[in-house]
Image 1: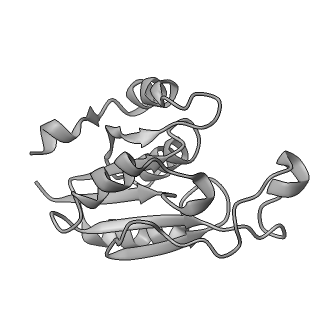
Image 2 (image 1 turned 90 degrees about the vertical axis):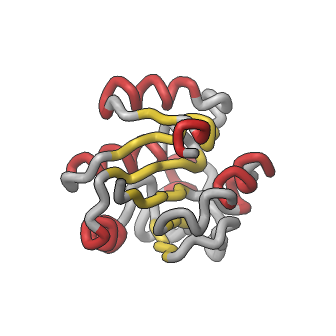
Image 3 (image 1 turned 60 degrees about the vertical axis):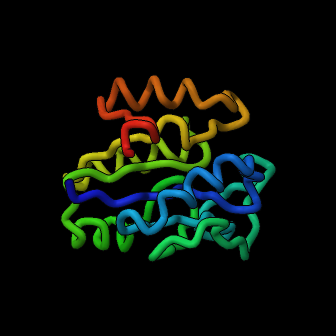
Length: 154
């Protein structure tokens, strides 16, 4: 099966647990990989004004993906989606930070782009609302249906 790994916002600003970084790193090299890094630019996305918080302006990915895209806000960029479509995967395996926000936003963007988003449920961490990520996993299953674990990828 042609698969691509999409890693959402595994960067210092979001303080990912080491098990998440290690688990994602163990998949690097097994398939093409793409990562997003969310950076702050108040003129693009009003994090500070609306939420009183913002990611760092110069964060880097903690996972060495084949390709890294910078984004401002929750959703993947048009350039990232174009790149993923060019790879022509049968499914896009999604993992990373904030299952119920940025990861879910990626799922909607992938779905709307005609790709098959598939969540790796044990390689995701939720937002401060639900750090377990279970809310996001439930929403993902409801909207997209496709959820796997790392055991199923072996």
